[in-house]
Length: 389
Image (cartoon, rainbow, N blue to C red; front, side, top):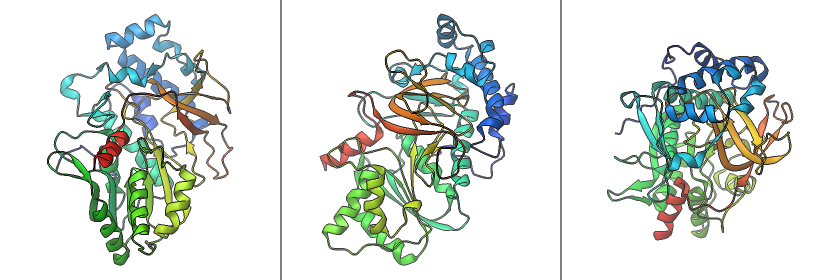
């Protein structure tokens, strides 16, 4: 089995020398308390910038934009940090950490297309994992009981180091694993979608009566349920505490794409699950802080992040309710200078306290990608694999 260096839920906190505010931010228990952590977050960002000043590229980048770590004193100051577009990391390998301190290298795409090489030292791995763990625990998706896992992602293999694979592997510790089935099986030469194997697993898991955690690309779960319907198979009645967590989008299947709401409406009755047992994740290997939607299916911003929406023409910050590029600011990664990351996604920020779920944190509405890109994501690679079949 490949070692993905996945920290367990009960692992002790990793210590990071010389960055007490960063350490303290990840020790907070409430993942959505923005007012209570604004200053701590700001101080952690300043620590992160100071660390990355040892990277000649990033030091020059800040200098050219007239910004120094000392300028970041309040949470409003983070808007001054010049963002770097995520696509930059598809053509440039930049890191602050020494090579011997890099514990994991992940790519953001499959077998073709441009790839981001993203590096993680021990702290960055721990901080990324814990940001996901605390949110999942907040929403009650971690159990001590036995769980069957159906992974709509890549079966691990040597040389396969995509970010989506690791994130799905990490989620295996959210329950005591009874049985594990992969949808995208490794053949020795690549991965193939095991459609009939997925159908068999779902029927077997229904009979066993244990909660089922279904994780991964939504398009492949849709094709499984569609085939079952075409074969006149009855709808399933999975354990009511089963959990469907989709991520990666429908890239490559735009002709069949459903909105998240449409997908829940389609898959819910066929699995025998309420819409509240469906969750989506949002993130990027370049960023590292995972997002999990709430019961109203909104992506609330965790305390490890602050999000700006920038005007597509001027890159100036926009107000709540206005559409622009998503700009993540986080002190999470100490190996690579990605403190302020500009995404190719359009988004809208909604004000704190505006979600009916009761979570007081602001939330992001993901509107879509800007333009047409030749870059291929993990989901695109997976879809091309299926089309070849």
